[in-house]
Image (cartoon, rainbow, N blue to C red):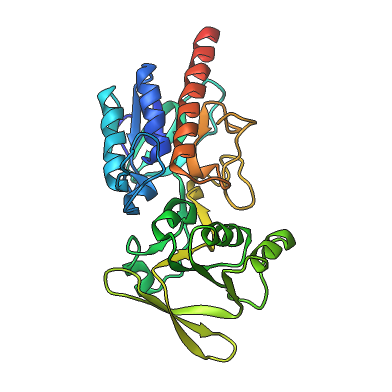
Length: 318
């Protein structure tokens, strides 16, 4: 890293709906944004086959295509999109100073403003059959993909509030929902547990784990195992939803930015401001409640506007 660091007005880390929407607004405000895509250009939507709930696509769109459209729109206004990953940050500068970010362990850039849009990664079980059928019936978002399994039999894995909420959501549109809980009780709140147990088409199975997801190209069934007795059972399903949590992609920001106990970045009030002046957070990296492409895009817009106002304030003070 002997080269002099490059100076950037607005650096956007991440290239999902939040990052690209931030880029669109930042570019139109002449903030000359530079986007570093991260390891998964386009974010989680690149692993989604169909997106039916994003405004502006009346016939639906596949996730990768939508992300290409967002990138093209950002580039149309002058966004510099680069393949690369932020591997370290130094946000210790004084207010109004530059923020130092290391890219791919070997390049340093200095940014007046930074918009963090690194997202969150859904946790999966790690079974080879589960990973093979992601996009072919295995999903980590019931609200995103449940519609495709209307009037069909599905299964969901998890015992927390998110799993309970998604199970009842699926029960409203699916014929039957089999809910697999690894332990002998749910972690969900009593209210959510009651909602599950009082929903007639949810079959709640305790001490139950997945042994194998059945199907070649798409999910056809599930082989389950009782972790107390070892007894195995197969059921026919067309969709499997994994609801065991998400991990925000914030490891490089530990000790630099305030975050909650789960690692999500904390933003100020209804804004995208972090506790570091000039550093903003948008999308799933700071949102563990909604986790939708459209809400991520909304906060990307907010982050760009917050960055523009911050820079205007700094320029006024100079």
